[in-house]
Image (cartoon, rainbow, N blue to C red; front, side, top):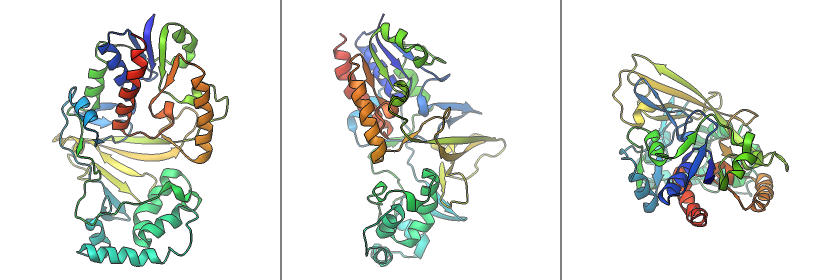
Length: 369
């Protein structure tokens, strides 16, 4: 018998496991993949920590969460400052005075505001009916057509005119020369990669890899006082109400021997639709690496299908209503708890995952002591 069995060795499950260990509870973590860490897993390639499932930059305004992770690992001073490539032209992100100068050669905030307002006015005459009309009414044609349209259509897999307007309620504009993508005061990458954080969280906890919890779920449930499930909630219930929708990702990792610096930046977005990938990552720049080789990853946004990994929940009205039905069904199983991005059908940043796990563990684990 275990006090708690956790299906999934990602960040949410690892935090719950650590908190369980602190309380002296007997815990088992079951993981379908051949490694721990979920999507923040890093694979070492020629001495470079490769973000194997896409770029993960830790950032938070939550001091409690920041102190929590820093007890396990030391973070470097990496600041996320991506670049956008549109037909060979380079622009700073997020949209700031550097971007506006690159677009229009304006040098003062007043000039940039005037230019944006001129372009917005043309599209503000009626209520936006889709994402394209909403974006044009917020930032005008130059920013939209060069830096938003193609990238967004690749992410969603459909024309912007078919994406609901509510998806973008605002587009942040900075009238300073600040390329820091995030506004959070705490930001960085764990020195040594994210595996160092996960390894510390799961230290001295029993972990079974290459094990699909659902194939023996009744057996695991019978062995435990509480079960935490971090996979897709609809999959757990055999899609009895229908399938929730996700977007997925595919990655093309390339080791480039003899090339010490391919693109000069960790993240470059490709915003024209004709380029099939959404961005190229160069992983060594996340940790200021000086290796003789480099690893780059082309990232593709694709439809979610059977046997692909779900990444982003599509939180439109139809899917949210379907999730509510699954959530109500889950509440009828008091021994079970669903958490994390897939179990909650929410897009969480890493700090939000940790905050959620800490909050949930207070209630879940206290009841087991």
